[in-house]
Image 1 (cartoon, rainbow, N blue to C red):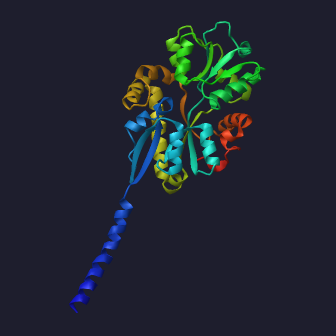
Image 2 (image 1 turned 45 degrees about the horizontal axis):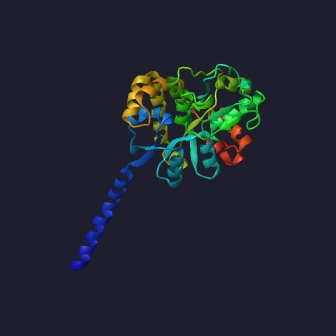
Image 3 (image 1 turned 45 degrees about the vertical axis):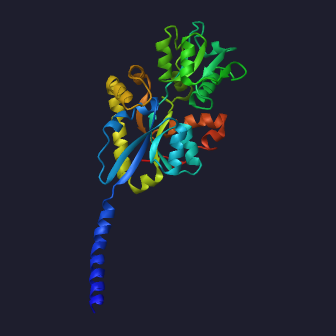
Length: 322
């Protein structure tokens, strides 16, 4: 009898604890990790990192990454739930079946043609020349091929693209006079011009793009989140989106303070260079669904040159988050 009463009491206690355990489980915060790329792409997120939003029942963490490849791998594995990727990389990942949502364009066109040769004044003057280009099969490469083609120049025939140097090396060698022509994104273009006073940008690639396409700019960087997070906790996604937008607005409003903050967060740039580069780096926060026309126009450059660089097709409507 005593044993029976003990079991009944134990069962009653356990039943009483079930609602409590459920409540405790519901209170466990959702941990969300956002990857921030070291270098120019990460600077726009500096204020969000230093002043993360308070989100009910959620904990927001940040992890820096040295390359887009690392961000991609961690998104695939589920180690992170969001990050910034080059436009074509995000499209390729989505087309490969990885459930991500493009939330916003956070970096618009910021590619420049630079030269230390005053005889070069227009694209047509590059016939027979070598041009060092930052990143084979990346946006600067395909953008320049497209615009050079509009001027009647074919890569490999009318001019020779060179891909053997990394971005900082191109800037240094251009400044030293070892290279005559280069295509560089910001902030490396600014670095080159700070190092070499004879370096100029005789024609504006962004303006040429607008003349050729009718579009105001071309997106380069996308902020993406996991589809799982977007479906399960849209409140978290919206809070991060609002925080990121505010971070970019503060970055543009106060380049000096942002540059110091970025250096303190070890985002891969010295404050002196970042301060000069920020106003030229085209940081934006434009919801991807609103930027779809520009996104597809830019991805079409990749499709024309190398379909596999975007996964063989333009991503569908479900690529674009809200």
